[in-house]
Image (cartoon, rainbow, N blue to C red; front, side, top):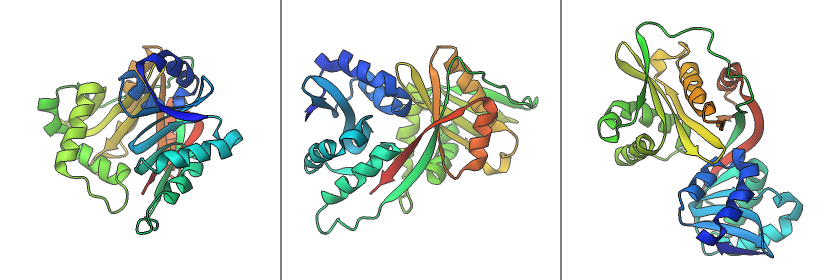
Length: 283
């Protein structure tokens, strides 16, 4: 078993490996599709048995990890000695194995680094499933628009994106600067589908895709201004965004924090089903 950098020669083999597991690793699939650097393969003889992205964030797809935990742990432990990791993203069980490997590579001064792990439920909706429309229609003063102009729409969506990151994404104690938020938002508007709900002309809620794979699209960035919650706006946005994706024949995936019962119930109303567990660990 060995770890090697991915190259164009392995693209089709890597695609074939990822597609059966894509629901759990849409972000990794999107990086492979875009030919991003820092993609690595775990190979046993000539067969791929794992793949991951490692550049600060360790984003993994190692479906048989638990059955060969000793072998995987040894080669990943050696790899992590020369590749710093600040965040682990991926299937919950595998991430729990990788966390102590990351800790073991820290220097004595870093070994007590605080960990924060956010656990999520993976929810999926396939083209064969029934997408259930919201029970309540939009009001005449409400309108959903697609935002796709980075230069014009970034300013309009800035406050919604900032508060989404503060409440749902940033680890405790970390402040995301305005410049970083602008960069993230411009990338979303340029490369993803972003829908915004306007009420009386004011942007009050948003939702967007986070990653586009071969057969799956991951949703994220779902946020409603607290003053406008309990109006069904998030439900309307996710419904409209999911309908667009399902028409392409792709499966829709999204992650919900385990303790966020209202969000879990909201997505189930649309027809989403729980289909796995995921975690993000920050060091």
